[in-house]
Amino acid sequence: MPTTPDFVRMLRGASLRVTGPRVAVLAAVHDHPHADTDSVIGAVRGDLGVVSHQAVYDVLRVLTAAGLVRCIQPMGSVARYEARVGDNHHHVVCRSCGAIADVDCAVGYTPCLTAADDAGYEISEAEVIYWGRCPECAATPASHQNETARQEED
Ligand SMILES: [Zn+2]
Ligand SMILES: [Zn+2]
Image (tube, rainbow, N blue to C red; front, top):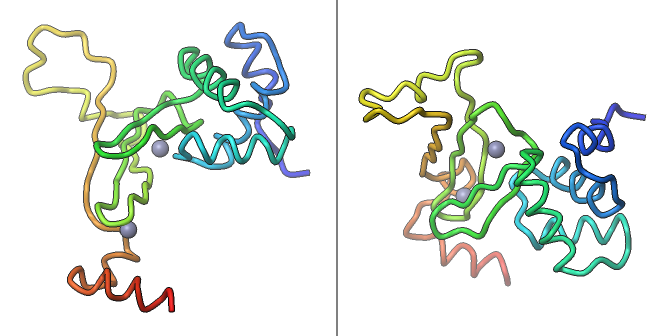
């Protein structure tokens, strides 16, 4: 078996009761970085069978509050969840298709946390989103993008 993170231990480490839905949601977010709620629900249902939307929302909220899951919400996008937490990494978002990829801070050094002027705030996180176009969209001339999409549907 491939080594998967010990979700049970992660839940216990965060002083959370271990439940089937919590383990399934954690696994789904881990397997599908930057998934939106609907994708998480889909993955959890594939795993557990019937689970209500509300149950998944509740679990996501609990896991996010506990710091096991990070929630990001780029402007104009629905909330996305990821299990990669605690490293202050950033995101690059495609303006055309909404694809999201991780962008690392330099390991062990987070220059973006050193604001030129912190205005006296104790800074713990820098949320940086780079906007642009993903390689796939960049390969398609912007003016022809809609046309191409239509042609591909035929
Ligand atoms: Zn794109
Ligand atoms: Zn990420």
